[in-house]
Image: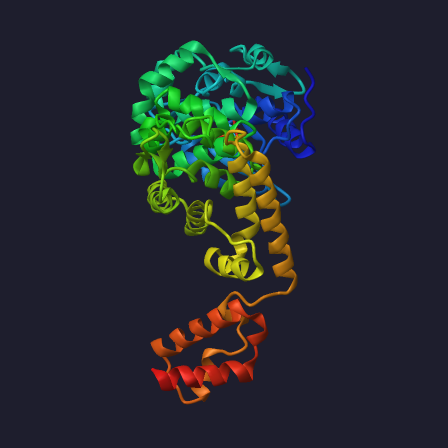
Length: 445
Ligand code: ATP
Ligand code: MG
């Protein structure tokens, strides 16, 4: 097996070897190279101690020196070079509380999570594959190195990493490994929200976001995202649907492009359904108010998982408006754009499309036709560059102050009323006219 190492990686390995130590590229980069994927980073493992590595390169950074990691800088690029080690108990996903250095590559490979992640390579010795990583790549299997339950008890994040790699690579999880996930998924409660978030995003934007089903079946979502389990357990009994809420959600995720906000919007769009379910006399289920209820839940859950404010705001707005009835008129569209936010309109149409494609075939053509009409009205409205926010209004707060109005709440109210006039009739976005309106409003107040 020949792997083409980047020139800088080769240089680092040769320099370390020149000083009498061993060095290999290791882990994810070897897995990705074998798969013909572009590695996101190249990690190097070596028998040299950190102090020795530092002596060999003019520029290094002590990124994780306690754990044996030195970053070697080649021009402006950094490469993590880590001394072979045996890990103690982990305090987070990357950093065990204590490590012991070793002179043995196999010991280092043994501490790694999955067989496909536990291979090393250099040009001198070729592929080092002690745990059958190559065979598992051929058979498309995620399997723990060593005793699965033991490996998951050392570090619970590995439970989520197993599901994540299976989703990214389209692999099945080996039965024993899967049993151990079921046993140890509850211990994910001890893992920080930030690390869980990272893995959840990677699953969501992977080629197989529906592998979240595996997370459900193994009790992973029960530990970190129980609201998802409720969706998996809520039937829809409605002609528009052929799946339960959860399966509809997974299908909708597959039907939208691999973008973080879009995939999360699909994941959460019906999160409000279990709580809003009602049944009519004919036994048909309805979920009145689920988008609004879902938007509130989305905010809470994303906050709990420590998502940033921008992502939380965008995803919850898409959830809130995914079913919002936009009238098929330019005026109705302008009002909707004002409510929803111009920034999210293109995303909203993608969300609506994916949602529809995950429903039953009932009235599919009519729904598709209406969505296309909506988009065509949206394009038409956009061309007119309408004013749908205060910053595009022909008058500003300062204009009103110049008229002698007191800065404060009143001005805000008047500006918003002027904006409503202009949204309904764009031709009125004209300074003189709006100032006159403002004076009238003020005298009526
Ligand atoms: P990617 O970078 O694409 O997310 P990766 O496999 O490179 O995937 P990293 O988190 O960058 O994953 O870690 C690099 C390597 O370190 C892994 O391939 C694996 O060998 C090892 N590793 C990382 N995290 C763990 C962990 N929690 N337990 C055991 N080994 C781990
Ligand atoms: Mg990596």
